[in-house]
Length: 251
Ligand SMILES: Nc1ncnc2c1ncn2[C@@H]1O[C@H](COP(=O)(O)OP(=O)(O)OP(=O)(O)O)[C@@H](O)[C@H]1O
Ligand SMILES: [Mg+2]
Image (tube, rainbow, N blue to C red; front, top):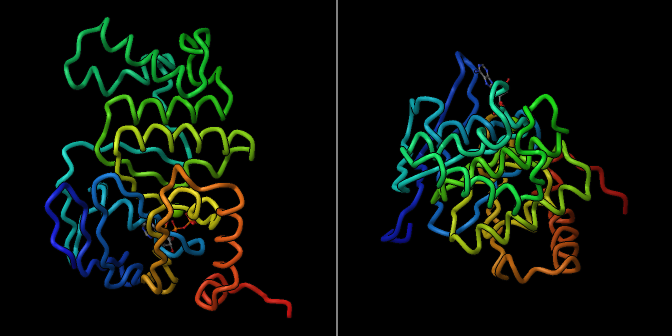
């Protein structure tokens, strides 16, 4: 592997079992500052397990995970907001934990909430009074308000309609390009992976193992819809993708 001088996340010979069931086998990859690495693969293949191991939410039993980033945050498919706190307090939560004063954290939380498309009158609402899409906007704002060097995303767009998905992806791309945030991005949506990643790791199932790595050199902010579409079509025709996702191919 290349020598790493900046911050990085590195998984080395990482394997994991739940009881007698082998879930992940010999996973090796590295994620460097400002890069997006996505993990795609069929359901049940161990993508979330891999993210949990990398994020320290699950104990590493075999192999190693080395994370030298100074700060990290999460956004999951399910927004997981604190139900007894308003949208604004949910967003500012991480800043409070950092010891920032009330006025400053309120201002930062409002700024990022507006960037993520929330409106002033949404901010005093409790999660139960927000739509699913608004809750996900809050979840992104909460994760990014602390300016994490590394962001863990586990299918954060999969419950959203295509319009909202596109909008939030665009905001996220702009934000992380500005901040040089690294992302470990779990998805089963190939087009989404092509849109957002520098590197795509293909995780085959039983046990979960990386069977192919796709590199996309074009900078993320320069990818047109046509480019994304063309690259996705190419991937869908790739034998290793066809085999891993068990796609049926009509000739
Ligand atoms: N805490 C746990 N205890 C036992 N088995 C688990 C646990 N968590 C996950 N598994 C099993 O590990 C396997 C991989 O699950 P994981 O959630 O990592 O898959 P995934 O690739 O994220 O799937 P999806 O795309 O559906 O989210 C599954 O068979 C699942 O049942
Ligand atoms: Mg999962």
